Image (cartoon, rainbow, N blue to C red; front, side, top):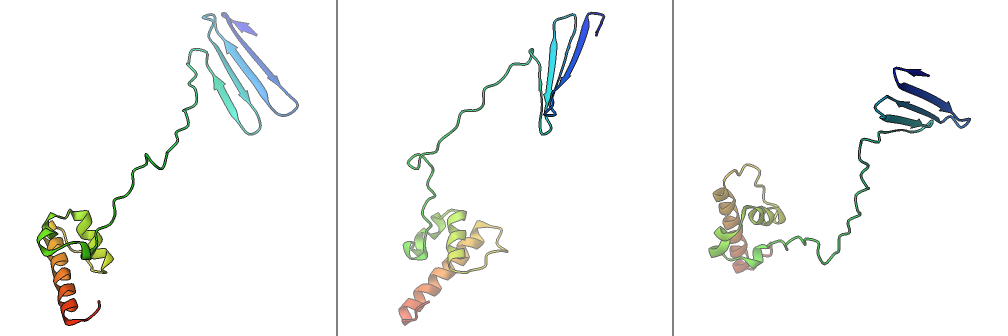
Length: 128
């Protein structure tokens, strides 16, 4: 069929797929192909992009998680030098609840208290 320079065509296949094409006087063609499970539309004015290249991650170039600090690796003087993540890791590893702490100073105080309790227990010969 043609109307004002536009044309339309439709065809179907026994497997259930069909093709639908339309074009206008400006030579723009739109094609739609569909099967029972999928449908695709192509427009020649749209640029087709190639699929993204597969990226590979090498274990040597992957970021490695820094090793967790332990209470035995620190001394009382360098507790304040630890960052918040390290303070929380030490507290969590020693089963200390820090849920209500909102300031770094509160975390430092809990780690300091934990450090002193551990030191006192070692001096008394008690294993914690």
